[in-house]
Image (tube, rainbow, N blue to C red; front, side, top):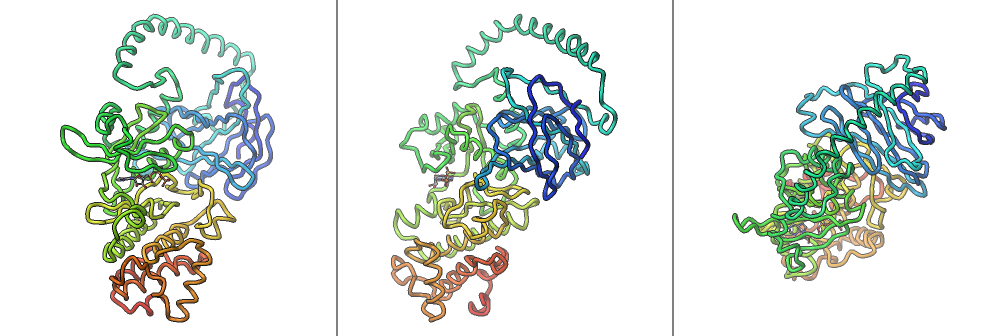
Length: 498
Ligand SMILES: Nc1ncnc2c1ncn2[C@@H]1O[C@H](COP(=O)(O)OP(=O)(O)OP(=O)(O)O)[C@@H](O)[C@H]1O
């Protein structure tokens, strides 16, 4: 921690800093000060338990190049700058703040994997007054550690000569070309939905998404609108908490995709960002494949996925004709494979956080594809963004930080849905199952809709795996790799699961 350095910013707004904590180290409380944190790259977690009612701004400097300004509203990127993610989340009665790094592909390409060991982080919160555009000046990294205090006189001269004059010049130039641009814009607007072009927030979001989704096809809004018949309800495949999903048939190629259009609410937009952050680096046969995206209308950003003719596992289990046992078992194995991949083969690992039948899609042959990464945690800190429910493991009720064993627990409850007709009142149902297991009567709970058409050995294996995954004690829960071994090995069920 490098002192109380206020030279990092020139700002006519009042400054409000509260207690911050990096990992487990509690820093002293700050009032009316900014400060610089020097944190190891991998541990850049900043968490605050103060209640934020005001707008927040952050400035962060990468190893080279100018600063990145970040607020809960906007993210300004420069090509040399490390993009950051920011989210406030609710932890009990406190609102917490986390800042984390998202390293986009092209940035990694640029610098290789040589991350600097430390990152200089200038951190300050501002109470927003009348001014809507606060001026924040960040030091260059070169001056880091040196004496940065300047006589006030020079700062004033700097503001007058160095800032006002160029600003006036720029304003004149802008006014000169404004009418021309206006004409162009009006022409452009005829073919595009409403976008606040002059809005800095819009610009920063567009840049942020381009960083994240670099390499994926960028659809035009018009293309998607045509393919979904103007997002007509007759083309709706499903509606979730954050988005509606439409079938899109592209006239030229006859290709069919699923277009996930996020709603207008801020949480939906955040869900889009979380999903894009996770899905852009996942490539696996059992994970729903992202085909493209569109952010022309920032209020309703869009992700385009492979179309799954059999929709979700929840649809297949509850709404339509019977899902056969071989399909059910194949689904359990496939989802386990997807989870092994995100937990053990991705670096950093990804925790899905919302594994359930509604988020497993089924292709024409009932192969599962894990989808909906809108609540996924793509790297430390692994924080559960959503409210906990009765389907979550006990550790979630106590702590916002989770491990991959959360997915294991949720997988357990999904597996029971594949085997049993009803699983409501999960805690009681688990106790009931454990008793049946002791009595050697586990098969009594089998879904009657299967009409007895199932493989007994596989059924017992799956029920036992479900119970193991639903262990309250996190240590007793198996890893997804162990689960996959149990489901795919040849050995005796009793030996494998005990
Ligand atoms: N690729 C797809 N192919 C076919 N149908 C899909 C596809 N993706 C989603 N759906 C359908 O749309 C529904 C909602 O999608 P999704 O779960 O991704 O939205 P959401 O808003 O993130 O929902 P949730 O409430 O689960 O978080 C799914 O339950 C499914 O029925």
